[in-house]
Length: 328
Image (cartoon, rainbow, N blue to C red):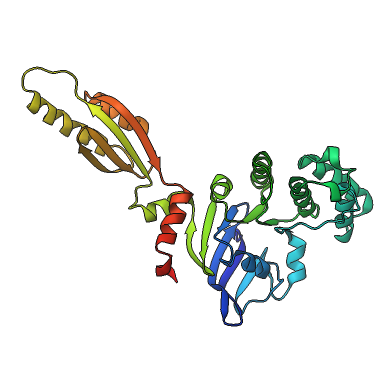
């Protein structure tokens, strides 16, 4: 069984002479949280519109849940829940009434619609606000209600376009935790479009970086870090010191140093070791801090300081944009 629930192949969209999306090929697996990352105008929202069948591509194909979005947009909409950047509700209706209305539009019987709506309001933390008119909801409450509105038709895929704009930090954290639960516990596929790097890094299994309508990088953070930083996504720095010795200090120190390098180079994931002026730098494919500390002590050295540098999404993003002109 094909586990790719979203498949985009050679997708291109132009508005006059402007190319909004340029030859995009991308797959997203069932149950995955995938982040579309890039600045405003990078092509993320246009890509989403083509997935939903709300705009047609110039060329290429788009399949969501095995359905061609261009040929059968209604079929895709039955399978996909979409939360846009600005959520719209009937302000003179309560949160519960808005959800029941959406459920009835999706042919859910009235009794089930009310029951499902109340369960979802509980899930998103709005049970106590279900009787309040949505015109009096805060931005964060409207986003929570928007997620409930997306879930009311039990979609296989959830698409979120900048869902945390205008929400306070606590609300953002709660919203992201809810998204992760939906993916991990219920197996829903989530496509998150955002330019908030830390949010994408926190919850996404893989990311795609968009620049000027093109997908210039795709993968998980660890693999992208290896590609960009000489295969060394983790660098461990240790200050080391020799114990007090008498006699042939120079000879003993040289012997101990060589032994230390041998021990560290034998650690799985260690790629490079450099020792200069009592500072040891170790480039690794993984976090090998514990093994390195044991090797230093085992070789007879003391440790004066220890730090770890892991290249995160911010480093990856900035490195790609340093050379963005090479991708255009």
